[in-house]
Image (cartoon, rainbow, N blue to C red; front, side, top):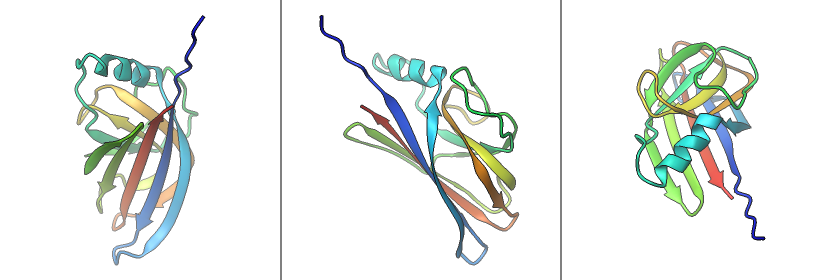
Length: 145
């Protein structure tokens, strides 16, 4: 019998910059591709879902779980500044400008809608303090192996 095990994993890089563009904080973490995200990937094989288009950050430290469909407590959502595919890796990049996603950020997710939609993945991490004048960049790489 032939059996193939497909895995979907992710890695997230977060950088916070002060109003002068100096790097204040940086984190690299893994994420959970949730059940709705895996269903999205399967549906994409026949071209039915709307592509991922937004990233959100929040303040809920509740652990990521397979059944998650939204962030625990959203602080802000922005359109992706880029989405690329190379080999088996899809990379999403978003920038949260000054005044957006401000606060003690501890969670993030990728979505296919500006306000709700399907969540592809979610991660929870040690606090990233984003001040009102700070900008934050998040690069999210999803690997299918």
